[in-house]
Image (cartoon, rainbow, N blue to C red; front, side, top):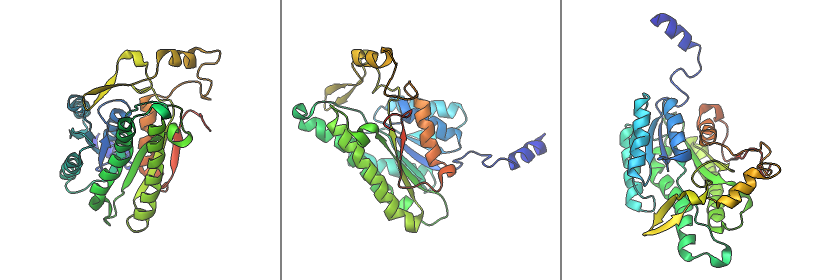
Length: 289
């Protein structure tokens, strides 16, 4: 039987998984799309570093991966703190025996207001989390990407259709998510020629997460002691789902799931996308096509 298993495995392109042995940092990996990325990456043989400000939920993600036979560690903390970013990279490198292969900059939330009512705090927080923190993490991890060891390296920055097309009430979020597109393209051009690093952006449309759930459900984050409600007003969600044509702005007529979103991230991270770099991939069900 053992010989037969080896024979079958020899016919598979990736018998140990698409990402076997690769070390990945995923930010915002305690829930939603990030947690699904962590699960799928671990299923494909990656060693996953779960980064999130919610320590309990981050550890729960790790526990689920461990229970399914994967490898993961939790490094909780606040991405807006420079010392945490240093710690995150240090712990990831230790977990990877001196190597880091993939970064998925996924962490973030929305803090909406129309232009003339947006506060400096709203603006600065969202720009810092989605834009500056992603840059600082990449910069801190640079020594592990600017290497020539023959192993793949790639960076995936998560954007949104708000960043590609704008969205009323989300100027701060749209600005930040547009910025990561330029971040990916620049990394691809700077680190691709000498080190073979791939960098891409994935822009999500309507994905079912706490950011698109009914705001009345009560999800929130805290910013310096202030509660920021997450989600979309129930009335607005109901109009999209219950109109004459449900989700009329989406050709597939439904939102995407966190698993579908994470699967797109896995696809771009995998060797199946080894010649894709500097691109922005829209995962929208056909919206804004």
